[in-house]
Image (cartoon, rainbow, N blue to C red; front, side, top):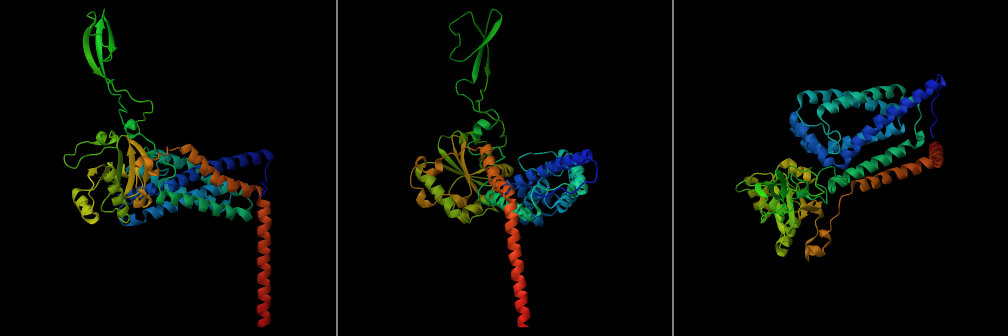
Length: 450
């Protein structure tokens, strides 16, 4: 381990300073790690936020680079956070944090005053802060950031200087892999309400209504009023006098009123057909396309094969889009689409699935899976009822389990390196010595040839 730099002061002062540095590292490091981590988990979501910023500040020409900026920002924040937390590259990391905060603090102050976007997106969908909350958070972080610039180098780091590049390299590979997974599949951690296994109907306001129990009848007897269900009405007891009928909606135990914007509308009369689709007991494939004009049609054959399969076996297949009727007509002409089209808010579509287009499989209103078209089964695999195929399997989302696995994947190699760093340092030293001797031999040989 790297030895602490000597602090010329009393033992009590050294202890207090050490505690303050460690506390500052924890506050700043954990904040940056969390911010970079959640951005890397869902880089497309971060790219959407960049698009909002570019639109607000009149820089729409940068939108094609939104995903690139999202990944770069996630990597930068995560690596800086790791370095601060572990005490690696202490001076450089401290100055980078301070410069970042000096840029972000006035920016978020402007956002808090002008309010051009609803939230800054600094923690993605994992933790949504108002613009004023974000500004005060940055003001608070400026204090430990300034402290670290002055004192961070006076407390040693966790890893020896000669192996810090290894922690940096592994952290880079880890965060880039996380971002790659989020781009080419779906976010491994889903902070949105539309998780796999979610019963959309139950999660909507009003929840799931138990048929037959929604109406109650009020009767009065001896000045006392009592409610009866339809089955228990004292209609044959003349001592009870009917007073009123009331409607009550019973909500299932697993109700979570998280989903308020899942509304599917008909193209013809703009009527709400959401419940018609969610309450249908058949399997339902939803082709979600936020913008048909910008949609990737590279896997249109797989989409059409899936539609043919759904038609052959009597399943539902609908395209849900926010695009205009003219854009729908162009899409139909270009792709030969025969499936019906319905409307939904663009933001809702982008929230449900990352990708344009994306496929969601529903059964009894429950999200079975969410996939990009490139990960749909081949036509040859769609050869039986869906119940007999692997695509009908529901993988209930377990965020805690996934986070635990990711934590182990990252922390175990880092811990092994920490426990064996003396050996690693020795090996690195021998390799460097061998390289030095090789260079010296080459230099000697070159001089002889001259």
